[in-house]
Length: 470
Image (cartoon, rainbow, N blue to C red; front, side, top):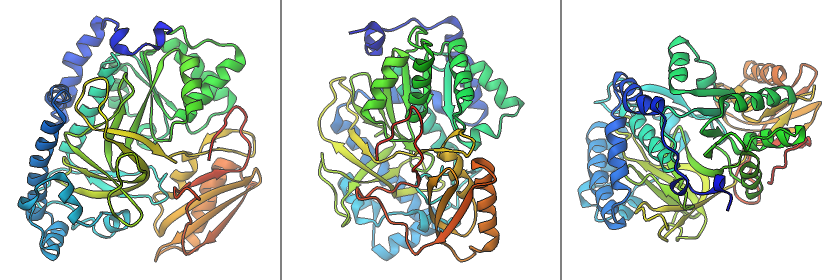
C-alpha cells in the first residue's frame, strides 16, 4: 500500500510546535471565552470511546433519563406531550424504550418554536438548516450542544493524526461561514490555519484558483463536499497539476452521499484517505469514519434509530429513516428527530477496537451541481439558499431543465404569494442568468424519487468532469 494511503495510526506525523501551541493554548482559550467546555469534553470522549459497548449503552441510558426528565419539567412542548402520552422518563429500562414517544418533525418544530424552548435556557443562537432537505428549518442551540459538536469533531480529526492548528482547507458553501468573515473571525481562521474556499461557484477559473491555494497552503487535511473535492481533482488532472505531493493526511467529506467513484478519485488525486462524515446543523455531528473504516456514531450524546415506513424499528443491516435524539440539546430539545435521510445501522464491532456503535451507510444524500447560462458551474446549494429562508414555503424542489429554463416546485404555505414568487425568480436569475426562464409551480406535495429519498436540486444539464449518480 502507498504510504500516503495508510491509516493515520500507521503513518503518524509529529505535530509541529505551532500546532501544539494552538491545540494546547490558543484554541482552549478561544473556547473558554465563548463559554464552551470542549477541551474537557474532548478528553472525556477520547477516554469513553474505548469503553465496552455495554458500558457506553448504560451511560447513554442514564443520561437519556436525566435529559428527558429535564425536558418534561422545563420545556412546555414536552411537558404537554409527556402528560398526553402518560410518559415517565424514570420508567425507561433501555434506550429502545424511547420509541414510546412520537417523532419530532420539521413542521412540528416550525409550529412550536417557543414551546420547544426550555424555560431555563440562557443565551441561544439562531441557526438554519442548509435546506437540502427541501424543508428549510430555523431552530436554536445553546452552548452545551455547540460544545458537544466541537468536541466530537475534534476527536474525529485526531483519529487521523490531525489536530487543531494543523493547516486546513475547507471547501464549503454555507452563508454563515461565507457571510460573516469579520475581523475577529478572519483573525481566528489565520491563527487556526484554516483557509475557507467558497464552493458555490465552480467555474474553471475558480477551481484553478482553488488548486493554486491548496498547493500554497499544503494542508494536513481537506474538508468539504465530496462532489466539490472530486471536481477539483478532475480539473487538476486535466491540467496535469499534482495534488498528491503535498502531505495531505485525510480528506473529510460530508453533507452529501459519498459515492465509491468519488472516494477513489479523491484518494488518487490527493494521495490520502477519505474519511466520510454524517451530520447536520439540526441533528448534530452524528458519525465519522475512523482509519479502520468504521463509521462511528457519537454515541456519548446521540441516539440514532432507523425506522421503516410504518414507524417500526429497522433491523441492523436494513435501510430506514434516520431518527436522532441529541442529549446535549436541553435548551431546545431534539428528541426522536426525523432527519429525512435513509441509513443503515451496523451491529458489528469495528476492528479499531472502539466501543462506539456503527452506521454502515447513508443513502441518497446527493445535491447536484447546476450550470449558469454563461457556463459557470455552481453547487446546487447556491440555489437552495435562495429559497430556504423565504416565508410561506413548506417544501420545494428545483429542476434545471436546460440552460434557459429552470422549474421550481413549491408546496405553498399560508403567506406564499406573488411577492415570494418575485423574490424566487430574482434570486435564481441572479445566479443562473437574467435571461433564464424561472417557472414556479405550486403543488400539493413534492414527490420522492423511486428510492424513497428526496432530491431537491436536480440538473438535467450535463456538467463537464462531474458524474453524479441518482
